[in-house]
Image 1: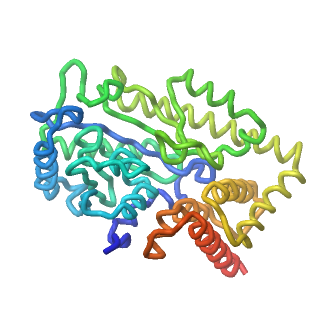
Image 2: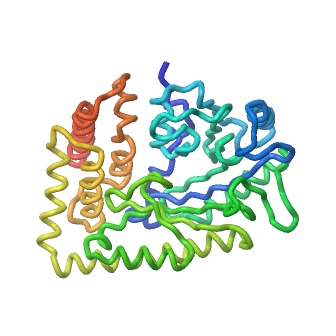
Image 3: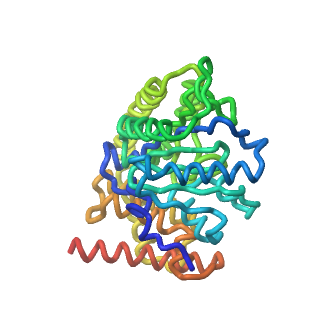
Length: 361
């Protein structure tokens, strides 16, 4: 039986709400903390029996962890490949947890805990990967919640910690705070003005890295970039997130400035380009995933520039995620070929946009 997505707290995607600061440019803010349980080998040396005991300890502790007590526990090996793909498209699980894109073997006893406060991946690269999402640019709130849940977990489970090095993790780059903070941003004007290369180089010089919409291993499509810190050792959680927040504020200012340049120097050209993107989405009969992402990028920019009314950023966020291939197959109740998915995607996008147009009318 397919996974009933309505059972997930807030569908697992409250970050789609477009309620945070700069929501037209910043889709979401995320804080992830890597933790391991004391007394167990780390992932590279773990045995299946250890993984099962780790999962059992987490399950037993959940009723005593207030932020996770009402959470839903999903074991990856009890879900279909399609269900796991849907969870990944909602950013609830990593590529590592679901066995990769090519259907690689699942990690034994891998699972996820989903609550309306936070999510915890169990038996991924580390024993626990706690993650908190916030809509828009809201890093401070994401960190505060992550720290709270981390303390609740630490009061019930023995975490591997070294007085000198901090929290111990499978990968040395995560040792210390175990924190990875990331922000998902939409930077079409910097791409169109050909400033993006210089901007991304600047991020690297400031100790940050960038990836595509789905993090490590994913390509950048539709001018959506995930920006995050690279190392954690020797720096406090607040220092890491405040540094990222300062850079993102500057990045937002650069994107806003680039948008003003586009309107000033190529107003009619840009307006025509963005309206054509909207028209294609409204009437196309077949859309590949990359086509849809690029067209939605244009429409998102048009809405932000107030060239196009009647559409909300929330609607565009929803199309971005729910128009992905696994969601379309889940809705159809069966696996779809690439051509079938392209037809279903175009139909879904047309329906959503038509309903928004009726509501505006």
